[in-house]
Image (cartoon, rainbow, N blue to C red; front, side, top):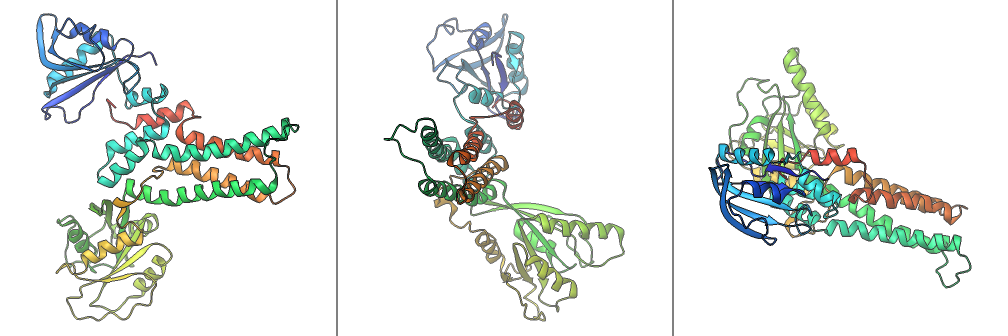
Length: 451
């Protein structure tokens, strides 16, 4: 924690008009003073901007603005300095080199935010939201990240922990100080409503967080079907570019072709797969097996059928398989004579043509409707957004569910407190009240340099 770290905080070195080099730690101001021309810099008040030059001895390296921030009112709660310099690759790296030569150490990925967490400025959930904000590609992803960063999600978790700790405190008082008759007497009857309220809240958080995961990671959509039904044409039409090769030759697509679009603020990741059919071609057979695997792993499967042909045995089997998961049927080539029979299925059916673009917008809308993600921009996006958070919430919910069931049996209330405390600790791990160093190192290693 006593390391004084430095790093370049801007991307695209060499193409930016301005780059930022930042330094944080107990010796940050002293180190920058050694290479900055303004002699009044050392005694300057916090949160001030200074104009001057970065120098190496008598040589002027760059004309810069220096932002001085003194602890504790900084991002890391340590002394921090940010140097705004010209965006040239050589100049920016030279300034970083001078900082390192004068006592700073090169920051590890995410180390600035890690300092902010370890110094108590932000909790672990908020730190993960910083990473989400940096990686946001859509306005919805940004909005959800800000919900976590501004503490809305933290407050939701803290409120649950407060209810649990209040319950635990009353149980403890009843056990240790039975003579305190003015305290609430915890019984099986009055513990149940509180537990059910906590359990219901956790259940809603986990359920809604499925949306959070889809907003953050996008929806993976596998496009499957027999050869030559128009899978690659559908991919190209959706992406509005010639991503996949389209020919009349069966088995042209032998590997997965990918592409993404944004619909209603949601990233749709399309995976065009090899045509599913019986084949003796070794390479094509590998592609078919990969298609079947992707069907199982995808969030959604679009089965493309040729409206100009009758259903094959393989297609009828595919329909049954997809009915067991999320799926949509897209009947292609309706600009031709319709020869396909009525499809007996519970799956949504969209009819269209990749040649004339009929049905494409309807297909996009159906994808969003399938996941209930319409008008998400107007909703409260206070969600958990990663597997770690959701796993901890799920474990806490399972513990509370177990307590509710055990409470129906002849078990003393103080025995139930063990699982309630474990659930409380799990929610504490979510926001970093309890953590392991290895976990923290892993989380911040995924950040970019300089953040």
